[in-house]
Length: 418
Image (cartoon, rainbow, N blue to C red; front, side, top):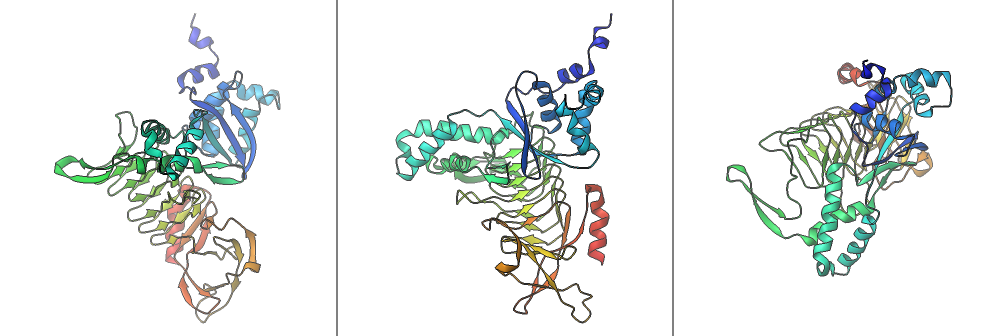
């Protein structure tokens, strides 16, 4: 008898996948609202394993590709669920995703020591009092625990949750413990190259099983940064402490401290992802999945890009930068979504817009402590606008929206040629 042939497909697939021993659960959101949690519990562990593996054990969009993979792994449960509507919700919710009716946002919640946050906050208080070195050994243990969990991707300096992204203040405080705890030392690199830094913030150690490439001679990841499987870091790429770089992303320049970059992105040569470690409460730059930052572009001061956002070469977005959307007649600013008034100038063909940054023209307010939020699919090119005072200024402009990464190349070329 061929016992393998008699084994249900679901169980065969489950046995071939990475275990979820360190995962507490997968939390699912739709349009920023919580919808469900798949816990690491009896009767749910199989579904959790499929979802976590399809996500690569990273937070991110649960789209058509991931949903199709999960449904394939479910094997015979696909037909069982169709015959028993509502009996298998973890199968049912994949169908509208596969049909293109919606995407979900998934957060992989890892098991973290229950007392870790409390220890960090206690040592942070000692730091404020100038007494941290009185308990240096225990403080260093806690600091290194935080850094190890950041490098594993189990901790994040910012996390998606109900209502959107939130800063994990206590995690940033954990990172900050390393500065008073470490002395400045000299590091000896290859070819007699030397550099100096705090002994608590060396370059990150990379094992043979890391699954990503750091290309010499001038690429590096700092201690406490995360890189997913399949990532490539090309000179002069540098990933600072607390930064998260999702799987299959290529970085050719700076990913600043605490910045959060999604999966399958390309951060091109000369482009900059800004960082922020201090002040503690400041929100870092957030970049979604499948984003492209063209050569010499930049995203700084807490700007947020949705999935599949494209920045043409030279586009820079900071907190003070309005991004005009002539397609919808609005602008994205740090205050929120603002209405626009079009004017016609000789020879302009309505391509120059008047932008009024007035509170009573804000159509949808947001927390102004961080930069503009650019919606998913936006293709942003350099543009020009006229301020309410009549000044001409360079202003990024959304030329088109795309729904798939494969549409990007033609759409970008077309937009820049117009």
